[in-house]
Image (cartoon, rainbow, N blue to C red; front, side, top):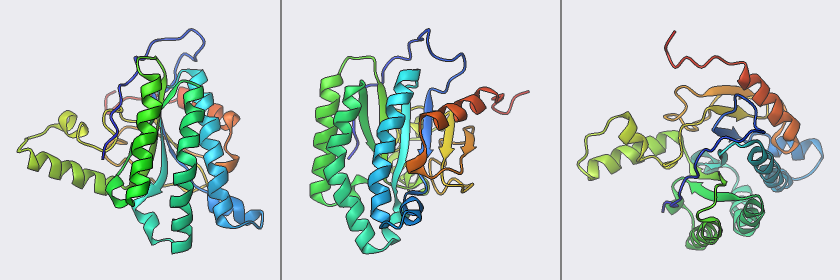
Length: 246
């Protein structure tokens, strides 16, 4: 199941910084550790992490950033304790519609990327109905897009795209292959931010991140705020993106 979305035009705004990414991807690491530090169950960290998505989406929209992607549930997360996985899936069922309403309040469309067929029928229905309702109200408006990556894995995504091309009998190039990825039609991220102190991609957007600028932050995701986003953007503004050229 793929969400269909019309991308907004990237119109320049006088208020936004001179050099700002069009698309930022986030590896939201540290929810469990955040809760553990506070002697709370890991599940409390996941609940708090959703609030951070709301904060960052609102701030990014105010800066004129068009696309955000959040790595929320990976294909590897199924290996976590069943109690935690069940909680995460129930949290999605309850909070995804609420998140969509919050995003809609600051003119942000919702998109979901990943192998959604891996979820139960109830969650699939909630995702589909939430996206349809959110995007129908924002149709034709020049807003931003928040992409929630669920049951997502970079390797699985590449295999999915290959099989899709084979089934269609198509010979692809880099551009047409990108159109078959879970994240289509979003552009590749200009900046990828990982919180929690780790320094790796963890199977996230492997094809798309060939020339993405990487930014690693020691703060745990629930503690990541607007000022941290600004710090990442200041660092990004100093990068010289050559894309293999001189």
